[in-house]
Length: 59
Image (cartoon, rainbow, N blue to C red; front, side, top):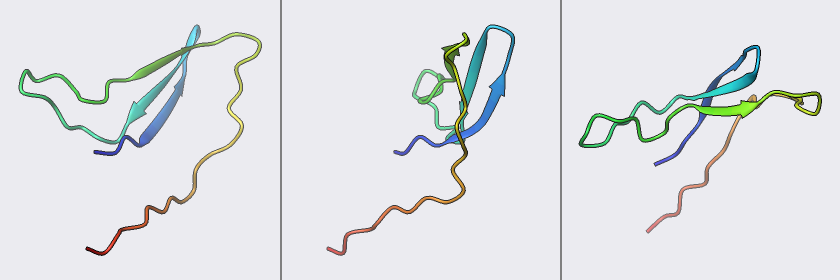
């Protein structure tokens, strides 16, 4: 399983990172819940991912 951040929401007191992966466990909870980061004077968004590559091993 891979967690990919799909959206970043800048809110008043925190930054919310929302995963693209919507998989859920047997209880109906998201496997990759939102990540909340406190927002203060040191918090910065420094760029964005425009492409990603994951090599696949041949068996």
